[in-house]
Image 1: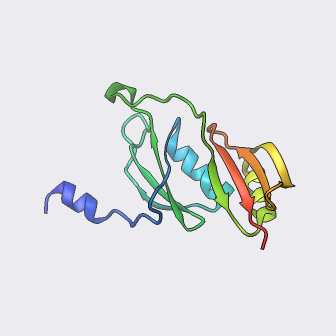
Image 2 (image 1 turned 135 degrees about the horizontal axis):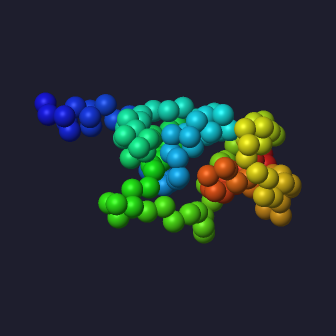
Length: 139
């Protein structure tokens, strides 16, 4: 078995069929933040290079996969910021998730409120610029 096959054999399963793959400025630091803020579990990480960047981190959050990498502009993969999307967390105990994320350092963008569609919903921005929507469906 060559090195590529060996590396692929260790890859953990993806837990959702369509998943976000975020480029952030500081993927390893973002993964640590997501552990504190959202209870993420690290499934896999490609070891950082000599400058501290990693090309792949696989996390599990709330039963789903989230993948991260640092930017590699020298290979045509620059960091361009985060606009036009939000990561949506559908959860039962919004107060627990909200309080944990805010305590970890997430910025409140829209406080949790009862929304016109009948769910409690709010938005947070993480220190890496990613917008997170937390939604607690009414039962």
